[in-house]
Length: 474
Image 1: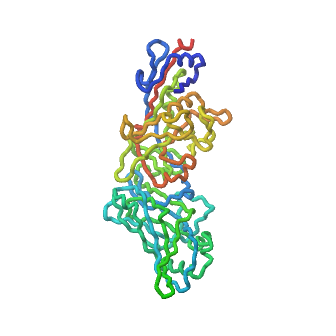
Image 2: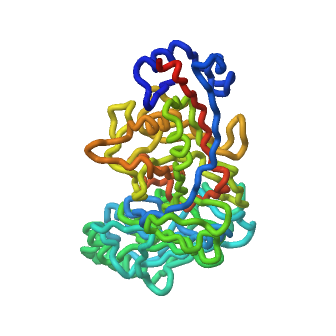
């Protein structure tokens, strides 16, 4: 392991290297095979509770995500969480129907591949309504989760179905929903007359506008909908030469332009009052919370680490581990994140985290953020992400991440920049859920509002460190 000393010269480092061999377990809990009573090296272990609050960042972009989602669930800590998707339609090759063709029906195929929220109640319908928009989706605009577009007062149709918990066949099923035949007949007539609205997708969507998938108020789940299986179908009949009717259809899929709306009505919850303005927030109970889709993160203050390190001029950090838990378990389908990520920033709380601050042990410099790598998995250690399972072989229901090199570099002032001063004493780390490394605002992993809660006193930093005595420095 890379052992870094803040205030000792090369002689101390050379002497220390000659005295130590590194392992993962005892003696001394830090893996130093030395006699801690010989007056040269003193080994120590310190565990500290890290003060935690919350931050909700400015509304995240959703127009760059192709996640199609709709639904609603209620949670005692996060309130009523609702999602609505807006999207344009895409055209296929247009072959005009025969002049004698007759309109038959208008319908859409839908399919979901995942859901989250409470346990679905068997044989109880949940409903997602398909609306036609009344305003354009502006393809030049960046939409965020708080945006929503106007739609027709009545839906084109309603997708009512009863999802069953653990019924995997449901995610393979295609549901065919009847739609408003008046709208379908209008589109069929435009096909029949070879209208210029079918000349391009832009022309079609300027006329049709697009659709919104809107949940009704009785839902208990948000559904991830398979965009590749959404097919709008205009059914009609053509006649062959002997007058025999032949079933035909014209199909339209989902276009690339769209966004989703995601909101959480937190009234009456412990996080009621949190604002999306980066301001630190303390919940009304003893927990702190994170939620992907609303960019709600846990903020950890590093003050206890500085309180320790400021009293020790000769500290060598051998190992530093951040543990997060116990994780609060919610009923139903609200599983905790498979892994967490840790971002480094300063007191300004911007997102993504602090710009143009590179890692000391790599030539790479984050252009938008520092996302810290799990130091037990990769050598050398690049900027990256902390990954740890929810359950480890040692402790259940807890995240544990190795941050040794990070705290070594932080203590050694390797994050400091003379040209762009960084206020180390006010450094913060954000704990967040699974995300996209390059585009944390649009990743599909943010598609649903996955929540997590941990007790504020269970976020702890464990430091194994060594103190070199004056005898070593003489």
